[in-house]
Length: 233
Image (cartoon, rainbow, N blue to C red; front, side):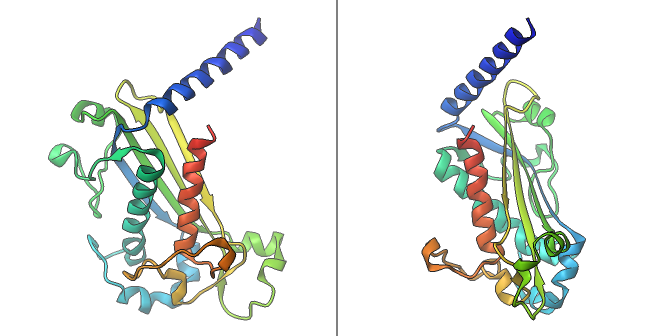
């Protein structure tokens, strides 16, 4: 009896996933919450770049977290562009709820699905959690070869993006997509680490060109992996 119930549950889950995949294209999505967390370890590792970080022009900057102000918008809008292009969805402007919800210091809605269901009219809603952290210590211990021939300051960051999706029928998430990216080797702590986030366009080259890695290229891979998380389900 338990085996039959398990089979029915798995079959139902697969059917729900298939229906969701078919119904997502050409539908509107509204952002309800977005949070970017930068670990203290990573910020400390790249503290020598503070003068350069301070020189980068930012927008909607509350003035107390310059590194976050540099990263937060590009991470979101690159993710938005990737999801729209690859999944065929329409993501509404971040101020879609107008004055009906609260917004954070960077202009993004600071809401939840219960409030969104009351005050919005989208077919789908989603929240984004991005996390940039240092795994340098762990990698030095587990894979010291990744740091060979590096006689200069380095960092080994990890960037993760989690997208939680809801529909307009309830508060239970209907999907969760996760993309994680790390570099192949430890990255040098210099201005190139932030290239692409410095208001100068950075072209992403084909893999065979073996482009030197940095945070912007890591972001591109994290977004790709987030999309693959959806496609693989």
